[in-house]
Length: 343
Image 1: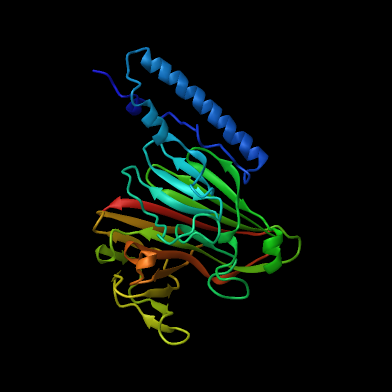
Image 2 (image 1 turned 90 degrees about the horizontal axis):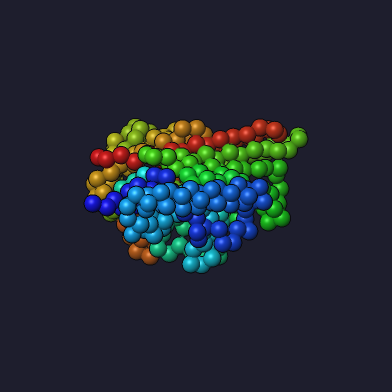
């Protein structure tokens, strides 16, 4: 009986045949590293394929394996570049350079955990409505534009492998016009066998001046339907700001141990950073593990808005609500890990 080359090569092969078409957002050093890795991977794949075929193992599934295993820099139908990460076990993630936003995370079984709204613009004309969207250096309304500018500027690729990517955002004429501060931000995404890890680093590269900022990942998570979802964590007994009550919102106390969404939501839970999304429809839970920096949680859903696809996502946002004062030469980190498990 012949073996499928897909089962023999999935853990070790990497095809990048369509991954490196146009890469204007990649630094020369990063481009060289990625291209060298692609060349090595292609050579290894060809060598292993020849070895297996010489021993009578079928090559019939090689094209499928190649497609499944492909990772690297790609473009969507509208021309926006993204980095696709692929783990040998089949898990995958996608990270767009525009906005530096993670728009997909699938576990090894193919379950998608990150949502992009059906009304999202994927052509760079406006921030992507979905994913792990950056709100920086401002969260919500304020002195500059809503949620700041990190979500609607092009980040550059600093380094990349099949399972990791590190992006960078530096000041530009566009950002300086609204917020002229000496910052340098990096955002690293690591696809592991059973989780997705992200690390946001804000550096003050100035010599003397400190600056203040807020930060958030406006995270959209996929749900089978809201009536099958509950959100647990240390919510019970905590005060929260219900922004939909009155003119400026109202402080209320959460009496539930498990939150369900049956109305429009925009609630700020300061001091809560351990939410778990339990979806009876998929039979899986997603642990939102805020390891460092992210201290607060915002839950948002435009209940009843069919155009936004309200019934198939919920925003459970990782937030640093109180402003951070960052001294010259200092840095701040926000580490988020998404860890799925079966219910």
